[in-house]
Image 1 (cartoon, rainbow, N blue to C red):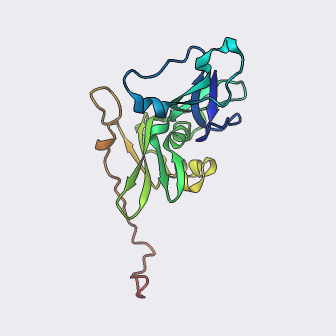
Image 2 (cartoon, helix red, strand yellow):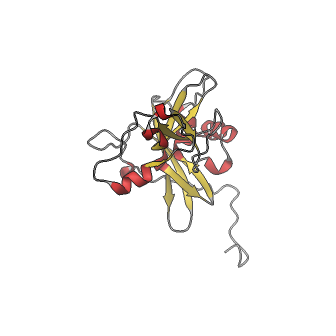
Image 3 (cartoon, helix red, strand yellow):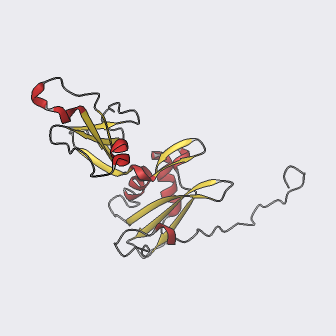
Length: 204
C-alpha cells in the first residue's frame, strides 16, 4: 500500500507533493545490521489494519525519501528526492519542485528546450540564494526573462531562483550523476543605467 504523507505521516490530498511511504505484508524487516537507519526509515503505521490476515509487518511504514504526488487518475508522479530539501528565509523548499517547473518550460508552446536542470542553494554566510542550472537543447540564446516570468506565475516568489545559468552540458561524476560541486558560479552584470551612488550613512 502506498501513502503520500507530510512530515507527520498524515495523508495528503491529490495534487499535493509529499513523501512516498509504503506499507503492507511484503514490507522488508529492515536494513541488515543498521539499526540507526532502520529507526529513521521505518515508522509505526497509523493506518494499519486490525485484520489478522494483514500480517504483523503491516504495522510499519517504510519512508522512501521519494517526493511524489497523486494525480486525478490516481497515478503517482515522481517529483524528486527529499534529500534536496532546503530552508531559505524561513521557508522550507523542495528543490525538485522548482526543477520540475523549469523542465516544463516551453517558450514556443510545443518546443522543449530544457534538456536537464538542477537547482542548488548557495549560502555565502550572509544570504541564501537559489541558483538554477540548465542544460539546454537549443543553440539559440536562452530566454531567461521568459523563464523567470513563467516561474513567477507557477511558484511562490521565494521559490523563484535569483540566478539562472545555462550550460551546454553538466559536469558529471563517474557514475553519471550531476556533479553539483563543480557547477560554475553565476556571473552578475551590474547595469550603470539609472545608478545613483549612496549618499546617506544608511545607504552607504
